[in-house]
Length: 350
Image (tube, rainbow, N blue to C red; front, side, top):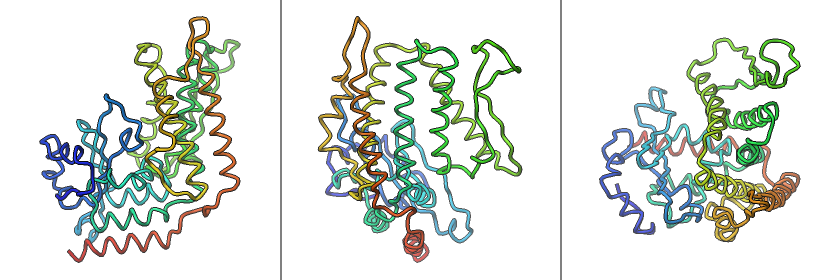
């Protein structure tokens, strides 16, 4: 496995340690990996001395998978090193849907690209094919989810139960925007709402989130995944009841930073400026958000109002970019299919 000479040496050295032997010893990877790049804080330029190195990448479906039409569409994950490598079939779908976590992989700095084969370069060079007005929902949806987490965490101790349920429901609905990236269509067959658990009741404490599902012949694993993701939102919110205040402050600051970063990146994409993962021009702002610079104290209580003013500014820019968006409504499926066929031909000719 040959890493790029242009990549930063310290990251190549890390990949050459025994911790990353799985890249060479896992049969589905090894010679099938076509792209590896930094992700997370190092890719954004928001890392500090405590930041972990996150690696993301792409591996090709094998010749046998292509010929039998039984292509892997599940990522390879190595949790110990926080490495995720997507199979070609899956990454194309995620990129076509303008998934922020995947789109950003094509806009990393050259020195943050650790491995890039001919096929990987074809994908990176054609990143523009995947950009469309779908970024309005994906980047907007992910940013709203971050905002909701921030609001939920700050409001948990003060809001009545009914209001808390509305916050949780909003978080789940924002999460559902991303389901099309991973699951078969189910939106029209699922209804979430807040009502009394057992009929009418004058006590709002007995109101909670309810769900109606009407599906037939729906894949069980997809349904399990959807319900699991919804449950995770509820679980994460409930965890706030037992949070460590110091650790919680760090998480809140990171939520604020990623919220603003998503809004800025989404705005640039909608303006036709491409994918700029490394946030050089916004570095000071993002690091100040991460370090809690904009959090003040009033009467001994932390005040996040300045952060929300910053968020409001970038939300308005994002909304304006939506109205003036220069991108097509949907990506060019014909051009993407040509790219997919070109890369798959290379696999079949090996």
